Image 1 (cartoon, rainbow, N blue to C red):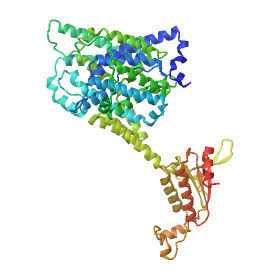
Image 2 (image 1 turned 90 degrees about the horizontal axis):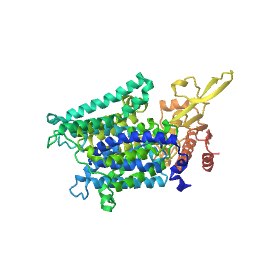
Image 3 (image 1 turned 180 degrees about the horizontal axis):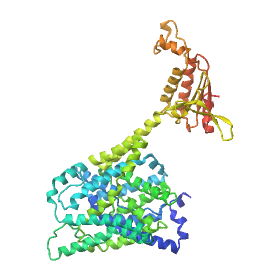
Image 4 (image 1 turned 180 degrees about the vertical axis):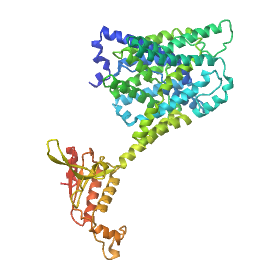
Length: 600
């Protein structure tokens, strides 16, 4: 069963039919038409020749169907991954002792990150993605989109010699300083950008205006990238007729066909990649699984995270033998394939066929303007910037989620996407640990309610909550406490301290100190006297404590020790054996643990 689960295709390929084929063919070719210009453009973001984007696109879409549990996702070069590879490779090459070229490094990133993902998948460790919250993803994605967009302004306007792998704020400053060097490339760049946005919003308006033509306008919209590239290439060719030197920046010669080679997998290479491999693997897995899960929810099916680890791992490991750099799930192309009516993962094969045709037709790409490809990149990545509505929602729902997002954006802008990932993820983990380690608890009181049938009942609610002002306190000498978290080692000491302090505040102390100071423990403070003691004299003696465990799913050894310590301290405080009761125990295991500790 385990081996069979590695190849989900076996579960549906026997039912494949002509209707599915028609849907897959249309969706696959449509996605392929989008991935060709995007693949070449993203390769330039990664600091690689454009053909390497096509290598990554071909292998990703062609192999994924064998291991897929998502019918929608399209694997290939993405904006965030390309930026990360570009910055990581540039950082390695900046070292005077580097041993490998940018192409070798990029391919080895694909090999090692793919192998790590594959191993995690085989071990069924897909649950690791559940520890990364959405604000982390939104933060570094937004920061990356801003960084990429600013980095492409120079190429959009034909400004030469701007290093785009440096931190974004430096790139922005250098670009603004070099604006007087703008040349004819800007004409191609701005016209391309205007066309892309005009077709995007014009098609959507037309689809609403003429709903019976919605399908037609949908395909016009999604093919806008390849149409502007074709149009700009024709104009560029006409501009260059009879000229020895092109007045604009163009792609020029691109090697034709696929090129197979063994990637460097030695210890020297692994040492060169270093810690950067962690962030590359992180993005590889996270982007892919997040997008696959999202479209699974939209289209009402479930993916298997561990199996997707295997799929993305195999495609990248094999892709490295074709000089591909890391490829992962693309949100924009996945959305296009989904809307195009894809039926099964086999649609990727048709995208691969289109890409391989492009790889053997690279002579047609000679006159593609660099400014047009920059326009394609800017147009694509600006959709990745978090919307004002999302940011406002984060602020209103949870301040620390907003801060995690903000840290991801700011750190990515001022350093690199690698550090943006690390710092935002670290802050998210710290916030999570603090939430677990510093939980609150509720003191419950009784609220009388009347049902529709006129029957009177009682509910136990937090007495400090403003919505339950009419709730009455428990009987004198009784405390009812509801925990909001499980009792585990990060929070046990804190809960112990808070519960004991609450009991001491609301009940009278009966424990008497030894009259002889020499008989008192060294760490026992003298009892207070005066008005504070007079106020406590009116408080009841603690007789019983009721713990509501409705929210407690786990009690570990440290947690049960904390309950035992609470019992010991409160018994001493009351100078009698206090009764302890437990309500709403949700598992037999917790009941067994309580009995073992002497509660019962």
